[in-house]
Length: 125
Image (tube, rainbow, N blue to C red; front, side):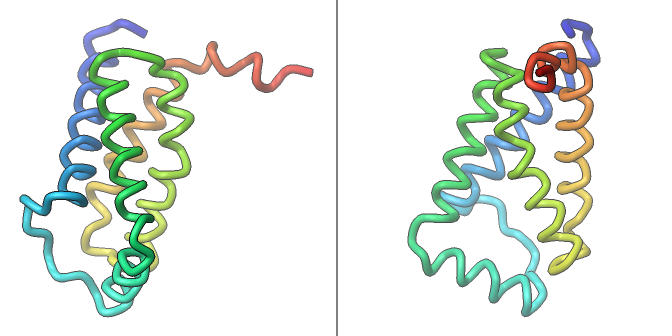
């Protein structure tokens, strides 16, 4: 779990989460124009006034946990629903942006696999 490869994956995933989470709050990276369906979906989330901000805060917190190597197995569990929703959003509404979503899911899966021993107690009776 402490190999160079695992460290690189952990830090890379943490940086991606922090950058894209912060970008949801303080748009500093111009993103490509989404499809009309994706734009409508994102507008509806923004109209709630809290969903995108909450997702961004979760992404930033999880990113910092990963970079600082604090509660990594827990952070990975928190990231599962976020990463799957990112992937499904791009798969169904914005296929051109699926690259980063796939990267997040793959990096998440690698770290989940590397920490699989920590999850065994969750699946025992």
